[in-house]
Image (tube, rainbow, N blue to C red; front, side, top):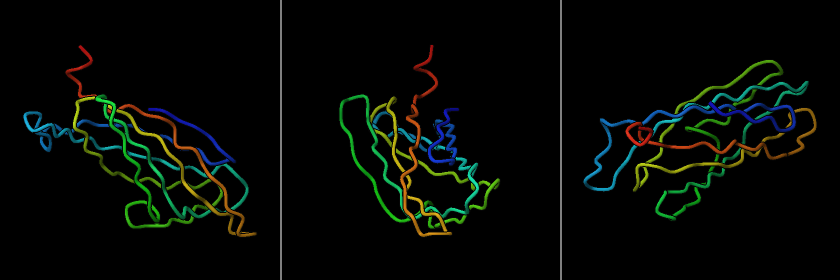
Length: 128
């Protein structure tokens, strides 16, 4: 698990290779990732948008951006957290992801970026 704190918002990510949804012969490798967003600040915040940069080990990369996470724009009170699971497919058995969440403080509508720590997507057999 990797973790990063930005402006009082802690983001932790862990990954899981999904062989049952992968097809290596067709260059399709599926990974799930679980994200926990914890509000360590004294202000209520809302996650508005996400931006991911996804890298395959073959040098290819792509950007993915959009509103919220898995169809939600969660409001997170001080001391609370929001957890979700999503997925990413790669053309190789190794890669990584990083990105940002655009958040806003409810009290003054100030927007700020929260860094998502870089994490690796690696099929377990590559670890041997």
